[in-house]
Structures are given as C-alpha cells and as structure tokens.
Amino acid sequence: MSRADVLRTIKDAEADAAATLAKAESEASNIVTKARVAAAETVSEGRTQAQADSQQMVDDARAAAQKEANKVSKKGDKAIESIHNDGESNRSSAVDIVLDAFRA
Image (cartoon, rainbow, N blue to C red; front, side, top):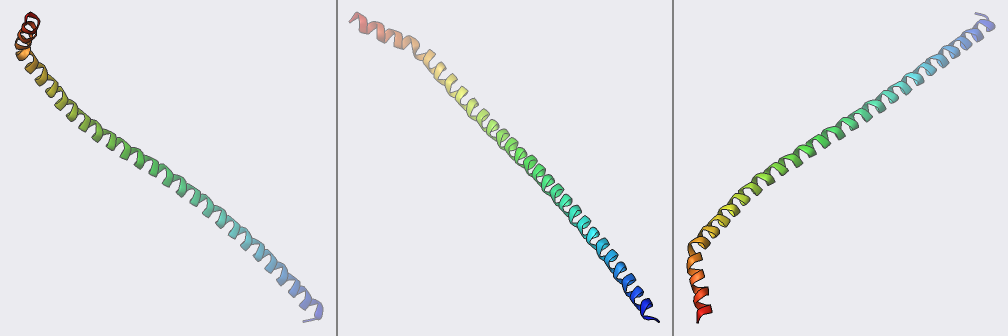
C-alpha cells in the first residue's frame, strides 16, 4: 500500500469513527429524553394516584364521622323526647306549685 492509500484509509476510518460517535451521541440523547418523559409520566401518575387515594381517605373519614354524628343525634333526640315526656307528666304538679305560691 502506498502512503496515499494509507492516509486515505486513515481518513475514511476517522470519518467512520466520527459518524459512529455522532450516531451514538444522538442515540444517547434520545434515550435520555425518553427517560425524562417516562419519569415525568411516572411522577404525574403517582401524583394523580396519591390525590385519588387521599380523596378516598377523606371520603371514608367523612362517612364514618357522619355515621357517628347520626348515632349521637339519635341519642340526643331520645334524650330530648324523654325530657319532654317527663316535663309533660310533671307539668300539672308544677302548675299547682306555682299557683299555690301566688295564692299564699
């Protein structure tokens, strides 16, 4: 091989190496871009799922609190009814005591 052939072969090899390097850098950039997109999607999906889970927890807690409030309300209604019924049975006695106090 002549010196010119050797130099041409070296230049061709350098050109091939440069092309291979450019292609590798491009592929690496694409891989990084795809990884960033995938990471952003994963974060977004995680946020959405976390919000849905927290909303479900709030809804469950609200339902449990409403159930407990209903129980307390029923107990209170029974207590009010009992007081009202006791008051009606004692009303005539109370009226007599008040009237006797004014007459005396």
